[in-house]
Length: 210
Image (tube, rainbow, N blue to C red; front, side, top):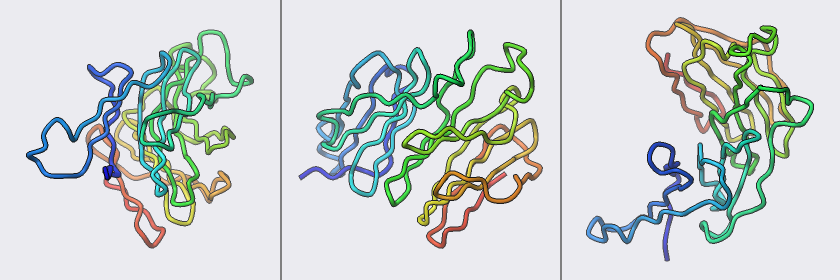
């Protein structure tokens, strides 16, 4: 029996449309522990995560924007791609792309996205990160995407989700409940460097590292 690590490596640089499954076992097994799987279609894999029920959840970037795909048989077959950005949000030249993916213990999938509205010089109200939980229900999150450096999605055991982002030297965040509704005002803290990182604790609380 093959057991899969909960942390999956999505193939971006150099791997094209592949993702990698690393099976637990002895180091001497070498290459037999690694499977490289091609995802159907021409979308590029952005993020992959294994759910508590062993479902593989994939966030991919297609020509028309981010899509969600899953596999319930360890990558043998995949579901039909689900478009995440609705038609009402699409505009000529506006491109959405995937940023992060998190899967709660209840199996709900949380997706963070951004777009190029800043590059098109659209109104600043449209410069932002976007949060969706699946089934799709796109919900705007605070923060401007024009100066973003990174974006992190964290999911707690109770279904709450935290979206954290970096804008210049400020770390910002917004908390959402399991229905995708924002909880309280967004927070912020001064932060050096280019990255944003954090963890969801078993208690349901979150820790961010500026």
